[in-house]
Image (cartoon, rainbow, N blue to C red):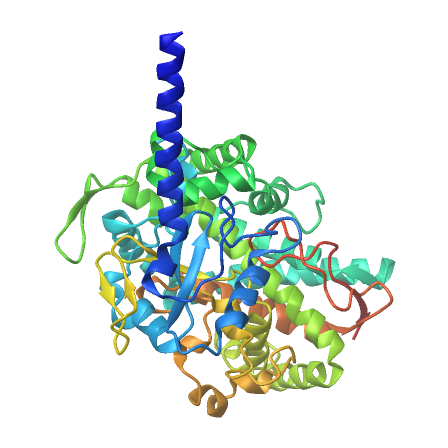
Length: 506
């Protein structure tokens, strides 16, 4: 009886300690006089996430609520973790560029021991991130893009052949699915040297697992939130984020590719070659003098995984949304088509790397699509040291605190982009762009941690869209969803039921 009583007292004491700890966390911003929205004890400010709202809508609502406040940032609760939610563009520029040395880390959850596929460039921090960034940057230079250009064009040619066949059978198509197949084949060829055949095979493995990787998680939203709130504890417990069958697929593909290239001494001067070279180096010296070990096969797996997922999803989504807007705005579509025809005529109807850079208005349309349909809703950073916001001494970002730059919400701010829901490529003319802060457009991030594959993503989207517009006229039809309905279960901006458009061969 006495022992039971002691256990009861211990339980009460532990509950009291936890309650006090939770109370301190949830009143963090109140004690500092910083604006914030009262959080749910477990979900924080993510009420409705993955049920009725996606990340984009939650961040947009929070931004809209505090947009007119004079605070450079407001409070936001990443589940139970107090985070800085940036409102002021000057602070965004400081975090991403000017004071990057203090905000070089993202603080995202990864577990290289139990979930090696999660330890990729997008998530990594510290010396390992600097190593990979320094070494992989050479894979995405203009020279490398030019080298890979003919490969991309060959996939586009196959894409056009498939599109003509499909349009002959049915003029109404899910364009979102078709452009996804195209980008899967481009990435598979350029990164892995593998012919994925997604354009003709509806059950292609790369396409199937690419889609699954974005929506299928190992744990519930609640457990993923706890991993985000308590990353160190989650690593000690050994939490794994990636579903096992997804890990198994990419592990098989990468190990087979690496083994075949090393066994047969295959050199393709591509992304995978760079990773293999880094694997075979015992030690690598960084620009700052730090010495780190070469890559393990698990690290190669992680980098190949994120390159495939990021390149496949962002480009295909942007292409799909661009065609959707061009179908709704036939005058803009005709203007893009006229430019494509003019540029190709100047280059003797040959689709060269140089001519692709001449598509000025098409590029404006792609940039406007990236603004209106921002695929990734925010940029994450974490403060390495205590940071007093310049000009606002009462606003302090503590060491180790997460920082959210809500890029999608910024892109829909009417004070920056008047009538933000309107599709207007002229916003990205040199004249209009010069009148906005650089950090007002962040689909690829900014500063030293911007998207390393930006050039590649823009290249494949530009080539694909130019030839689609040249060969087909796009219009809306009875199956076209207006407005689009987004999938709340997806972290990226995804639609629930595809994007159906009517196509007419030209």
